[in-house]
Length: 346
Image (cartoon, rainbow, N blue to C red; front, side, top):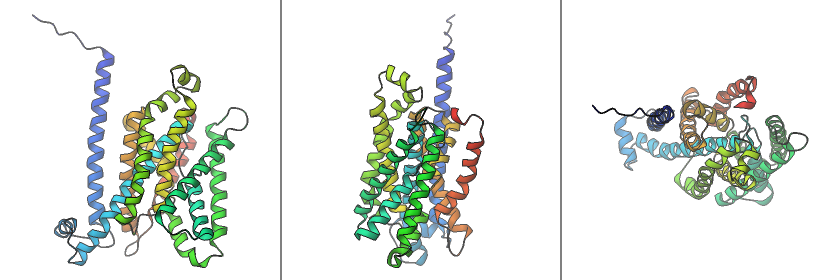
């Protein structure tokens, strides 16, 4: 009689963990596909499946098929922007070891928005390529400024100091932005609509120029997963395990800045998504950034797509911009995180 040796407990747990993560992955991908189909079919005008299929095939003979042709790039932009912001949030929380880190809360989106408005008002900037480069520059300057201010004093860049520095930077940047827009009636309407944050009016001509920047940010972020796992153990421990702490943080932060800058340039500043998504993903797949970051991208795309659909449905026949919807959904989550007793351990 042959006796099969028992598998080690750690190996069994690892296999179960992988099985659970793959189960979540299949579920998230299915939910994202369903959200995309809902986004194409529902809105201020409902579209039947026959028109959806015809519209996806390129036909625009009827009004319904034309609506589908408009909603397809809008849905693609929602998935792309949500994924970029969700991934950027996970990276920022890993780099700063701050559970409150978010492109909106840390002032990165506000810095990008201020840079774009300055370019529009003072330099006559009009091309999308210029918007993207200027937004990335503004996001980078804001991120460096917030981290520098948050690192002053005892204890270095603590979560509380980073959150306070980010909040102050966001308020200051928003005030400067408003001061620039108010006397400029020629750009006021477009600028204020863009500041709310949304994916309406998307087209593939707008999306394509942003893809290289988002792809570069995606690669840099995913390649930083192992380094962020080491940084979670502490700087001294990470350095002892062979990680170059400064380079690891700089590479990951650059990836997040590229993602935030490119997304802000085409969608405007969208808040709270990068805060909520990583916490949701940690409940699903744990704290390993090799799993956390891809899931953050998928869940971010899913949530922003659903938020866009909600914005279209609750304000029929008009629509509510997705930036307002994410603020309504994200603010309670932010308050809940702040009230947790072990917020520093997240």
